[in-house]
Image 1 (cartoon, helix red, strand yellow):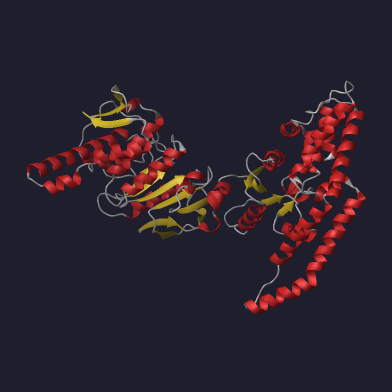
Image 2 (image 1 turned 90 degrees about the vertical axis):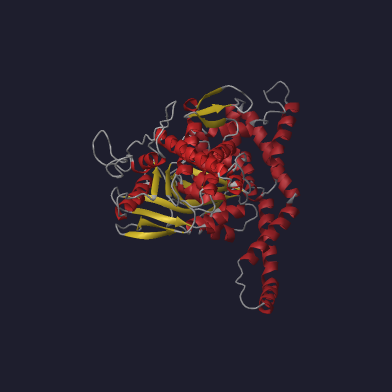
Amino acid sequence: MVSIRFPKKNSEEVIDYQLDNQSLIIIGANGSGKSHLAAFIEKKDYEQATGEKRGEKCLRISAQRIMNFDKYIPLKSYEQSEQKIIFGDERFPDKQSAKWRNNKTGSTDWTTSVIDDYNDVLSATVAKINEEYKKFYEDSKNGNVDECRRKTNHLLSDEIELIWNKVLPERKIEFKDACVVAKFPDGEDTYNGNQMSDGERVCLYMICQVMVAPKNMLIIVDEPELHLHPSIMNRLWSILEKYRQDCHFIYVTHDTEFAAQHPDAKIIWVKSFDGKNKWDYEELTNDILPDGLLLKILGNRKNVLFIEGKDDSWDYKIYSKIYSQCYVIPCRSCHDVIDYTRAYNKRKNLHHLQVFGLIDRDYRSQEEIENLKKENVYCLNVAEVENLFLKESILQYYHQQQQISDSASDTLIKNIKKKIIDSFSDDLDKQEDNAIKAGIKYHLSVLPLNGNIAEIKQYLHNDIDKNIDGIKNNVIDYLKTISESREYDKILAVYNQKGLYGSLNEIAASFSRENQGKENITKDFYRNYREFIVRALSSDTELCNIFYQYFPAEILKLNKI
């Protein structure tokens, strides 16, 4: 555990923050004040320290850093190099007037001063390697066999190469004759390490910074993701933490994936900064963090819409166009949509966003639909999202775009509607059965089950006798009325049948046989219909307006559509 001087939330008061984990992640959107908070921590460590070397237990690796180094590594003592890295000057150990001094203005700037210490990091690395080599030689010469065996393959040079090989196995490096030498694993040709890629040079810099840092340091890393692929970044820092378990790490990032990949870290979400000494922030807990989803939401500035399906589902393809001003997040099921919407709306202290859920109507009763609305979960005005493609106005739009005659369009739509209506009538018993089961399941889910087991059993027995037949009769009467009315839109609102879209191909094929040569309509007329409609939603305002009438007015209104 380490104690950190930290600003109290929304206050200029400074408190002692106890970091009992090895790492802390400070995350927030761009401009939220994350880097200023990291500088604040280092500055307070400097201000409260006494003695000649103030702030010697905190090393902050700035995001404003130059990642170039010389062909030949300057040879210095470890003490000289270490002092330059931590304090900015090997002779004058004062961070405020050396490391964070802006050379252009002459003033101290803890956040934007550009750090150019790569050569010093490599100097410290070479110096420490040489110290270990010398000690190993002396142990060997003095016959300290056990000590030599213990250190074999565990010297700093071995560990750096081992870490490098785990992170970037496609390239080999070694320190040789005051140079960093790089080569391909299967080749003999070598080249100087200063010619490596940006990402490779960043990896080497971070590895050496951490591995040569003095014991028990607080290491603050600003933007650990800079120049690094996410998979490399996560692997790199996980390995470095294992090698330096004596140290504590603070990462400052806006990368939500990085935070999600560190389940053992404490996470502080920074919401805002007043530009002086006040931050608004929250410490996140794991109670509602499914796969880092909370971090993804916090990392964006749009209102959030949870939907059913996957990235390649029709739900997402349509909703991401209709709600383009929202952050649309597909979930595995309607239950996830409901649970996530509830959970995030209970945590308004973490965000200022409006969070909604949008699900298929399925077999839900009007009572269930109205209760879901109270929790910002809304139902589509059709039973399933695929039923939208069967709406008359959307079919008419497609027909117009395909430039078929009005009479052909009317005939196709008339036949499609008859096919769907007749299908619903034929399928009525199954639809009733599924709707009754859904109604009973919902009814039981909202019962107030209190008391002991015997009391609950008696309560359920009485409730079933009293209400289940009523649920059954209401469903049968409701669906029977819709079926007898033969009202197409009402049927699409309650008809759950994944195979309905196939009816379009049957109708097109029948039309083609009966009207050969009269219209440019083949059996494949609707083959790419859905894809065409989704593409058109990206640019055609007319089509978007058609779709809007089938979506919950509450979400459209709240999202300024």
